[in-house]
Every structure is written in C-alpha cells, then in structure tokens.
Length: 134
Image 1 (spheres, helix red, strand yellow):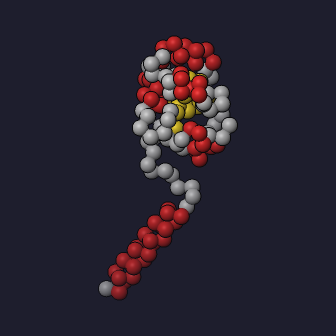
Image 2 (cartoon, rainbow, N blue to C red):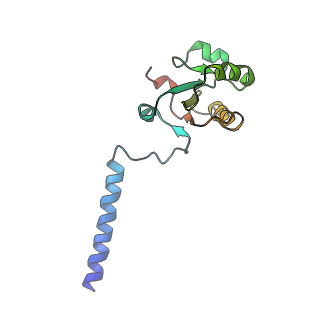
Image 3 (cartoon, one colour):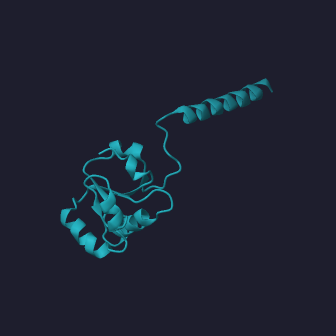
C-alpha cells in the first residue's frame, strides 16, 4: 500500500513540476494561435525573405503602414494582387495584417492568397501592426 501512495505522490509531484515549468518557460508555444497565425515576438524567427501585405483599405494604407508592405485590400484584390505578384518572391514568407481587434481583412486576404493563388507560407499577424520594428 505504501508503494502505491508513494507512486501517486511522485506522479502528482511530477505533474506540479511540469506545469510550473510550462507556466514560467518563456519559450512555450502560444496555444491561443491557429497554425497560420503569428505574433510580433515570432517574427525574428521566421526564415527570410519575408514579404508583408497590408489588408486594409488604400486610404488606411496611405495614412501609415509597415515599411515595404504591399497593399492588397478586399475591395481592390484583383488589381492590387497583380501588382503584388509582379514582385512576389516564391518560397518567401508572407505576413498579412490589418487593424487589430475586429478586422477580418487579414484573414480573408491570407485565405485568398492561399486558396485562389496557391501561395504557401502565408501567415496572419495577430498583434498590432504598429508594434512592428522596421
């Protein structure tokens, strides 16, 4: 009986240590992200080259954007897509962003790039694009 109690105690203790390590470990995976979502902290770890797509309207893009970003908005997708494809680097990582919060344009543009254009390595930025360091 003592053996079973000791085994249960060790199992419990191992679980507590494992959970504590997970909580305090700064390199733990972000479980709140979908497979094609990234955060600002993940950007430096992406393989180069990285191309950035701003999914906001042309007016919002003109008022400020990430340096070297390409504008592909939902309302002008076909026109702006052809301009983007002229400079697109195959096998590059593409990061799509829009305004943080309730904006779904980045998700919609990322899906269209993947599904309609067959482009791989497309990710949606889940952070505020203004935090991006150029």
